Image (cartoon, rainbow, N blue to C red; front, top):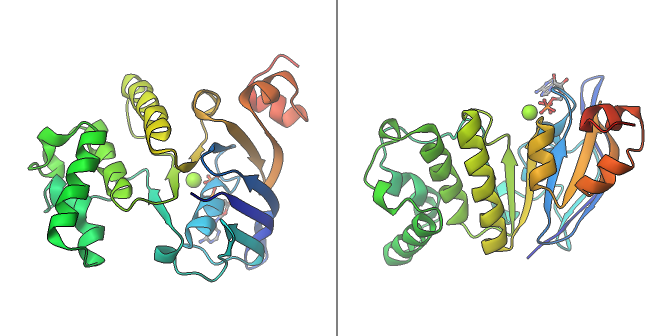
Length: 238
Ligand code: ADP
Ligand code: MG
């Protein structure tokens, strides 16, 4: 399993500073939530960790490995997107196994991993369906299944529940907490929803304007917000 170390990470688009010197230590197995208002840089920071955005400055370590220039597929991570990004013409079975097929995983092993992911996510009965025959929550489960089969050390989630209705969001939150418990992997989860952050996180990272405002457990942030921004955002009485 792998933790992560971010040192003075920066991302610029031309003159625009989007991530402005982020230092962070994430222990392996932790559930870490990046929270902050829209446009504060949460997705950019996650995509830098995933290898989907070039790093403009600083250092990224996944486990012991310096990863600034490592290809996404060699980072031991899997990312789950808000939009699910499923292939509409493929069955659930094929969607979940697609990455394994690309990696030329032998058929029998692929089958075993797909069925194991389906069991973990309680969607064995959905394997023959196409995405159009699934509810929003089921689609999101398929997207998570696609990440699970790759046995990543680190899962990255970018607002995975924001397209779901409120009741389903609560169910899926509990499911994610269970998944974290069962898999024991490191999870980094981006949301703009304070409640989601407070209920899921071992550790919350509050971002604003590409700068870390505070890092702490939900209770620490609630009881001792570092500044007015954190207090206002987390909604504590201070
Ligand atoms: P969040 O996920 O917290 O809503 P983002 O990481 O998507 O925020 O964006 C952070 C900032 O970076 C925003 O101001 C956004 O407009 C800017 N940004 C993101 N991607 C690009 C890009 N490809 N080119 C220029 N600016 C970008
Ligand atoms: Mg975003």
